[in-house]
Amino acid sequence: MGVITVEQGCLRLGDKEEAFTLSAEEIFAVVFEGVVSLHDVPVSRNDFLSTGLKFCEYAADPTVVLEVLSPDNPSGIECRLVAKGIGFEIDVARYDGSFVDYALNDTTWICLPEGSIEAAKAFLALVGLPGFGPISLGQYLSILQLRDPVLTLEDRTCQLFSASHLASRLRGDIPEGFAGTLYPYQAAGYHWLAFMKRSGLGSIIADEMGLGKTIQVICLLLDAKNTGHEPSLVIGPATLLENWRREIQRFAPALKVVLHRGTRRTGFPEDLRQNHVVLTSYETAVADVSLLRSVTWELLVVDEAQAIKNPHAKRTVRLKTLRSQCVVAMTGTPMENKLVDLWSITDFVVPSLLGSLAEFERQHPETLDGASGLEPILTPMILRRRVCDVAQDLPARIDIPQPLELDSESAEIYEALRVSAANHGQGSLNALAALRMFCTHPWLTNQFTHVASAVDCSVKLERLLQIMEEIVSDNSKTLVFTSYQKSADLLARELAAHFGIHTDVIDGRTPVEERQPKIDRFTEIHSAAVLVLNPRAAGTGLNITAASHVIHFNLEWNPAIEDQASARAHRRGQNQIVTVHRLFYVDTVEDVINDRMARKRQLAEAAVVGTDGKNTDAQDILRSIQISPMNKNRRG
Image (cartoon, rainbow, N blue to C red):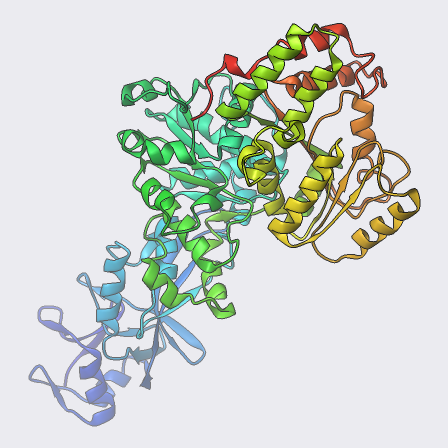
């Protein structure tokens, strides 16, 4: 009779000199169908039972299992092919480089369904694996996308590779040359971004507003400079470029930065390569895509990445042709309306991860099931921390400066107003007030009245709406402070029209007895809402702790006025962290006011001037009418 032996996870018939590796069909035929000969060798059911194995008559469920290699390795993943039965699972073995179509352990033999081995080979080919075993994070993400009618996929990593979990376990040094201090969660965010870059993957950092996405990415830009050979490119809204320049100068002074914009921007790739970081706007990047495509960027960063959420837009299509070693998308709202938003941003960061748009829409329809199927694939790629998640690391109040630049046409008109003020002498407070009003909105000084849209002639209003987009998506409440009645009416109208949320105004026109009822209505709303306030009218006596965001649309000469206004939300009884945004134009009177406020606060001086400017230091007034936005290249 035939000799049956167990060798390397398979059954063999015959002696060592001439033995045959048996297939599932051959074994099943002898054990369950009474066949008495294989390969011209007499064999019986008892020959198989003599191995001590129990033979299952039903077929196993062929399953691809993903699990952690070791709890000590934060990024080690193993991919195994197992045969699952009732109450057990067995690894499928390979003999002489080929899979056998059954599985066995010390006690049990079970066959695989027809077509399982072919499906396993196709699976490995799709993800570029020579065999089952350790895999990379990129392969893990690809595997999560696979759907096969024969193979079952079972992810046992228990979200250990979610971005937030992985970030909390990674360790390392902050890049040499970083001139700041990171909160623990910010250091973790940088380590995660660097890990994804080393893994050959892009990433999406979607921390809530106020948590410092920019500073974490600046660390990564510094790391890219220290370890790479090519410059990095940052693309963002034109309103944010000056903030990027200032933040890089502050935290990574070793980085050589150029603003690529305006009529005097270079047309030569070699000029761009002379820098460590190139900053440009979405509009300029689209216009200069051929030039930017001639450089393979070490790191490509897209800020406010919801700008590329429309996969069919010219902006998205053109920017996806840029070349880089790694892409990082920054956004507080990775999905604004539809799942396709996520596909578009993700496809920019890791092309083809989610398949083609048609495949994505077929696999992930706009349903709860479609979204839930997408979640495990994207959690390793999207780092999202909320203020409440890291509250223990944060102060009770987060101040976010928002330096902005006037566009070229606005800068020319501002310059004309400034020259007029200078010609009238430094005591011309009326002319100085006109500059402040123009910076609040041009319509307040009867400029750009031919422009139909208030947003189209104000970079500051454009930025306010960008900030509010994220706040509204989070259903948070906001106080917006502005000094002028015309500005208050304009802002209330624009915010209500853009977001369809409760919007109200409290200023000098509001009777005292009506102010608290307005605040009560604002507080009772269980969704996003806005109060537009005059800092004088709301500067004292009002408690508005329902708001977690404060926006100063124009700055006050007197630091005490602004602080009193911010204290309407940031005060006893507030159980949320308050984020204070301060919008101002650089190289204008507002820049002088911002510097003045910083100086006064550093000296810990109380109010020394009135908001009308009558007691303002002569030097501040003089500088206010001397500083000019025309001294710098304007954006195109």
